[in-house]
Length: 171
Length: 229
Image (cartoon, rainbow over all chains, first blue to last red):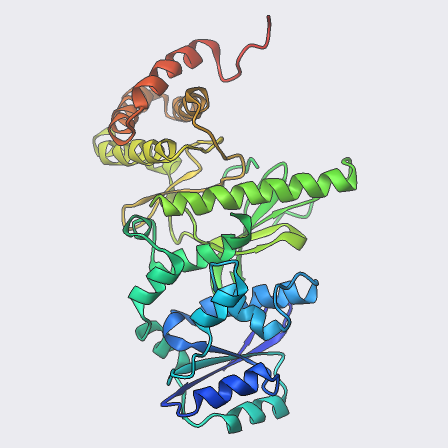
């Protein structure tokens, strides 16, 4: 699924289920062989949420304000409400056991996409939008973003997470 | 940032005229309705002022923006409905936030018959009471900054002048500004409406009594404290 950031930069989103080789994907990510962000799909509630994270990462990276070494790592960092970088990867990244993955590629090239596709042993999910909206882990998300019952009176859990991401650097 | 009434189009500086997406235009910035990454959103952009020294200008702009974002985040944590934050772009001084679909301002709600105003006033008082209980002072509590949504819930917008304070004085002035805003536009129902609002304010906020005592004082002297002596 191809989407665009504010300045027109393209972002490719892909989703896989029944992934059997997430630990080999993890080592390829760490060695820099694969250029993409790989997320646990249960922690993302909407395509919009991951697009906002991509926008933040892209903006910070291109203006030299990134906290991480690569733009794709910065996507994970943007998704988090924490300022600590090591925690971010433990939370949103791969631990080698996940079977359902969401993949984000900013500025995708045909070759890099093909490389990613061939590295993943799993089934591609076509309706990403629906899969995210219906399959998220509410309890985990509330724990990660520290969302209280009180806060849910002000709006949805998605809005609460988005507000956390956007205000992280101001608190 | 003070933002003028929603829907009013200003031709000052020319560029705003005929722009349908414009929601408000104040002394420090513009508020527009836009599509942000595929979703309806509101963007608030502060423009730079040529008459200020560039360094000071950047500092003031970024501080005010940070202040606004901070109070909005705090507001949501306290369960007080305000637009969700989507994205803050410090480099261009823009804040993207939730667009409240088909919401009506309190100003428009107050032109309904008096009999139906009771529940509305109760919500206003409760919201402001919760705000003050959390030590948030809005700074520009007007009837255009309170929005009634279609589901009957009330939300508060425009945190441009907001700040954190536990001072009774600040909270009393906040109430006074609201009271005046209501009296100025809806003089026939003002007395009743204000009384209803303060009643639910008292219920929502434990230290309301002290603030209301201070409100008496503010009423007799006006918003600004005299700086003589």
